[in-house]
Amino acid sequence: MNRLEIYTDGACDNFHSRVGGWAWVMVRNGQHGSKSRRVVDTTSNRMEMEAIIQALESYQKQSVLTVEEIVIYSDSEYSINILSGKWRIRANTKNQDLIRRFQAIQSQIDAAVSFEKVKAHSGHPWNDLADSLANGAMIDSYYNKRGFQ
Image (cartoon, rainbow, N blue to C red; front, side):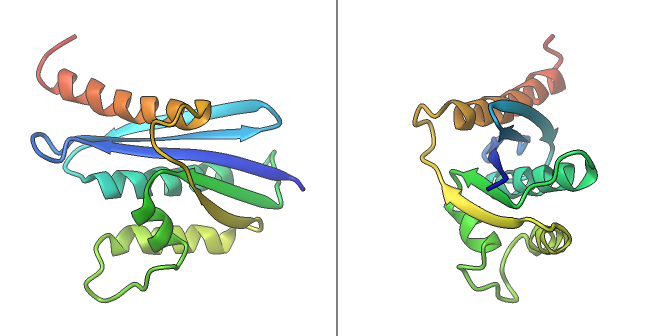
């Protein structure tokens, strides 16, 4: 089966600066690409979900690669359960803006999208790369905001 693997992660300093970072790593046939960004005034759960959404948006925008299946690997049980529909979304569910964005993107993608839970910091190279990129985006932002170079 023609398959794309996407490893995602989010990071956030929830207690002090509320600065976060998200990252994704796409892997197909041994080749990989990645992207990460920082976000201010956010939460860990938002960064985990944003990484997934950004990865799917990047896949959707490109026109070269077509796959039958997209498997998203995440260490966020919250993101997996909310976005896969395992948890019921109620009126008071947080992050509904991100849930709606995910649903809109997923409905436009022809590939089947599934989720796999991966243990954080488990030594898996692609997951660890996503973690490193997300934390790097957050940390760069944290120190640059305070005038460090």
